[in-house]
Length: 174
Image (cartoon, rainbow, N blue to C red; front, side, top):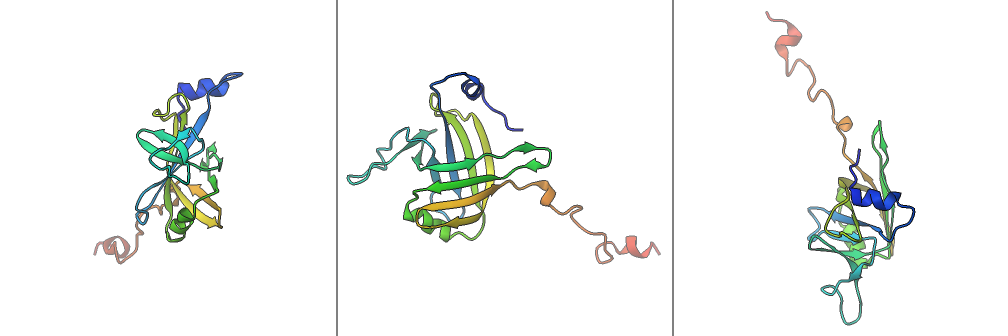
């Protein structure tokens, strides 16, 4: 079950509110030099990333800049069968992101955090350690499935009781 902060609950259950949840996505991989940080809200201009020819908007949370890109997210369900899947679609991506994803051949680690616009440094809900798999992309969009690694996928028991490992067990004691 995902734990949610009181700040997020109050905004979610209020009949009307001026508060907005912001999803912060961090994509990381050993083959990616700098983590890719994406925000679902153009909270403010990111002056460090803005150039003379291009203004960059995003969210600064806990000292890290997250670039605003239109994102579609299907949040995972909490079910008895285990964690659900989260679908991630990022639109209007820069060509550099597409080239980076193209050069990664193993699952990318993805963390999705929710912060509220009135408390950007407070994580209200978090889904850490998703793996981005089944990635497809074109010139402007990256789409992937986010999955959690579960213990159900692990072989159990870890070893097998075979004669090569347990000769006394399989052939008797004598």
